[in-house]
Amino acid sequence: MLRIGTVGFLWVWRILVLLQLSSGILGWGREGHYATCRIAEEYLTKEAKAAVKELLPNSAGGDLASVCSWADEIRHSYHWHWTGPLHYVDTPDFKCNYDYCRDCHDLAGNKDRCVTGAIYNYTKQLMEFDRGSYSAATYNLTEALMFLSHFVGDVHQPLHVGFTGDEGGNTIIVRWYRRKTNLHHVWDNMIIDSALKTFYQSDLTNMIEAIQRNITDGWSNDASSWGNCASNQTACPDPYAAESIKLACKFAYRSATPGSTLEDDYFLSRLPVVEQRLAQGGVRLAATLNRIFASGDRVAAA
Ligand SMILES: *[C@@H]1O[C@H](CO)[C@@H](O)[C@H](O)[C@H]1NC(C)=O
Ligand SMILES: *[C@@H]1O[C@H](CO)[C@@H](O)[C@H](O)[C@H]1NC(C)=O
Ligand SMILES: *[C@@H]1O[C@H](CO)[C@@H](O)[C@H](O)[C@H]1NC(C)=O
Ligand SMILES: *[C@@H]1O[C@H](CO)[C@@H](O)[C@H](O)[C@H]1NC(C)=O
Image (cartoon, rainbow, N blue to C red):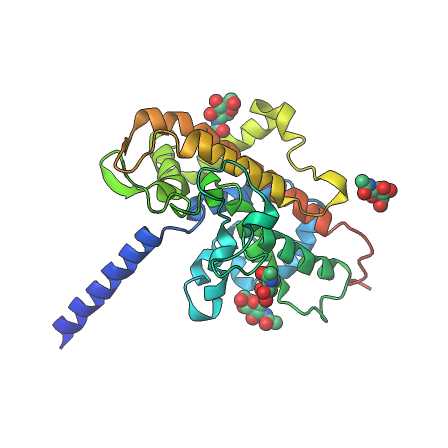
């Protein structure tokens, strides 16, 4: 009995692992999301910090970064299945541009069901908190905060704004050094994993600190404008998605055809792109949260 049970369990486990690997549409992996949110935390205003703290679940221990993969953890459960399409937006094949009206829908064609639509949606919900109507809020704003923090990360992963036909690189099977995987997974996880091992003594904190140094020094001229939104918008994910598909075409898809082996050349030339996208995701998440929680007449405390 026990043996059969164990074997059965092992098979189920293996299948789950395979599903994880093959479905692969998880957004930056845990490390990427953690890094983005950790960076964001550094740039929050006092008001935004207080609001975030109030909204975080107890399990977060006051740390936004610790819940930034929540949206991935729940997405395969029945109740949350509908949120799958909120992690990405696909463009028509070989079109290196993005258009909200054309592209933001789920497979069934429901409008606004995509990563940029979700960023607008959860921003709007969080504005209710700022207006002091938290207790009367229609939506669970703890969830809204966790979704928003996750999706601002996702929209910066270039292959989360990839082509429809290859599911953002998920169906492009490649080798990452000796390991068989798919191109999407390379950008979610493998580039970051290899960087951690090669350059950061396998310590994510080292990588985050190197990125933070670059935000203040390396990219300083650029970085000061990353958080800006045109025309007084609170959230502006559309330009981020447009950047992502451009980077997908220029860096992710290039020289990564089905069956190719990606090694040092690809790794070393793409890593700076990945690190800059993690940085931009963090700075922009902070800027968005700062606008949400500063936009005015908050009366909750009264
Ligand atoms: C907005 O978020 C709420 C809460 O998760 C959800 O019920 C609703 O369907 C979302 N709307 C869109 C367009 O995704
Ligand atoms: C809000 O969502 C979180 C995460 O799903 C959950 O733990 C919490 O109980 C929810 N709060 C309410 C009031 O439903
Ligand atoms: C820092 O910026 C430089 C110059 O753009 C780049 O070459 C390097 O890869 C960046 N490092 C990190 C950790 O972002
Ligand atoms: C931005 O908001 C300010 C203050 O609410 C307003 O005066 C200005 O006209 C707005 N600008 C745009 C482009 O909407």
